[in-house]
Amino acid sequence: MAVMNNVGLNFARILNLSDARQPSSKEFYKFLKSSNANSIPHSIFHQSRHKEFLNLFRQRVPVIYGWGVDSNLEALARKAINQISESNPIGIRKNGVEWAYYHPLPRIHTKQVEWVDTVSSLLSNA
Image 1 (cartoon, one colour):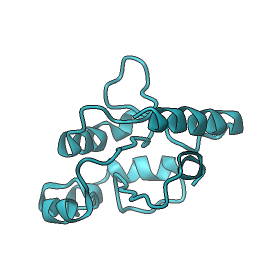
Image 2: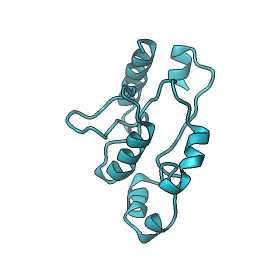
Image 3: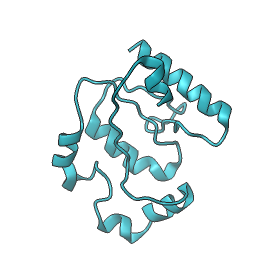
Image 4: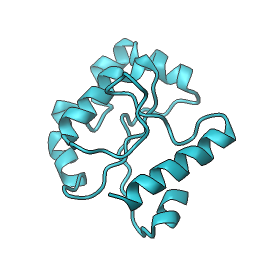
């Protein structure tokens, strides 16, 4: 919401890497490694949900990446990047890691403010 307010946007569409709801990142990563993760299409980027993705995703609008940098997210992040095929995404990419984009809500508040300020600036200049 802070980014939207900073750049004057009234609408945003959020596509999560997964529909799985876990109380913590640690639990989510454990889910990703489980057989359950492989047996259900929990991600909008799963090939069986391509029509649903096309229904939700809009071309020619700014795309912000911010799913996190933990290596457990790599497979889902790569699927998202390939499916979105955005050549100039907005986000704060981890140096040297092409799929890793910092999450908007890190545990440290000053990092949250930094994320909002940086992404707001990138959007304003897009």
